[in-house]
Image (tube, rainbow, N blue to C red):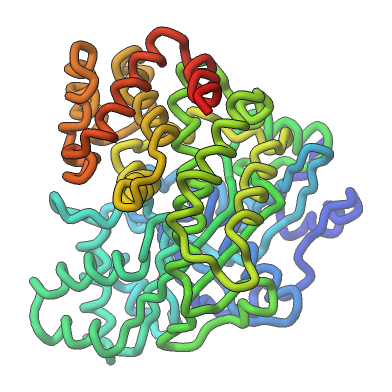
Length: 468
């Protein structure tokens, strides 16, 4: 029988060959309050804190959920003493370890006062969060940011202890974005709160990276049947991980550098490495591979035309727009990215890469095109990627498309592009004026659209490669 994941079973779990926590979890201070306890947090920040605790650190994490959808996570974690299994997979093997750095979890769904009370807690030094790229938007009322502002008001009223607000979301200048959104909402609540945020809160920028696909029933079954552990919500990830961050903490921090975190004042350059190489190649293959019926990233990169297309995009379009980081050549980073895609163990889904195209392309791909237009450089690979998105929107039924809050708007422009491909470029939520006004990019997009319709995804890639 598989062992339920409980504190009382950790010795038995270790006898299965699984790494388990040996530190006193009750002795960890609940100094990190994390909002958005999903897969990425548990594969990234929570792992770093776990490793530090294993070597004698005394920082722990209290998870907090404010949405009804968080109720399931709260229940699973509570049922297994807030322990969970992290499964690292490469092409050769899977390795499981138990993480104990999340010491409790508070569900505050529908209770604004309880959420504010947690942020005001005197032991809390860091409010960290993964709330997705769109979670900071103030285009319409944002309950999450409003709740954080109420919590900061409660903290100010309780004495105004300093606080680090640490975004772990995958967007450029994530700390600046968090600062802007939270400050704007706090400003509406009075000058006293605004002064507290401006003088006592810090918002470090960081670059976070680890491929973490959604947990499947197959992952749970493998853990139960092959390893012997019954875990309601394990996390699966690749072996690679990276965290680059500014050392700007208002009330102390764990010694993250001891477990591989890089502190630097060049976070922006690292962000651009990731955005314009890893994230951009993800988006460049996503819709083209979805059209081709490819399910997993490792299957895509195993197709010669796909790999050559991505190599060409990286070498000719992305890397020339980047500032080289001393000691970390962009070409080496690019090779690492493509190597990560060959991982047949992690089974990253193409469908995951297709989520939120409207939000991703302006950060991941459009800036590269803009810079190449300034340099009079190549844009054909990027044009084909965007043509793939347009065709995906046209040919995939709305109920089957990957989630995107603005997907219907994008699809309306894509339908117009059937008769005139350049009509898609009028979707100004994604396409900036330099792209809309560029005859060269418009021609490249129109050519890519026609070849894609005629040849299919892999055929269009090969057509592009054969033009050299």
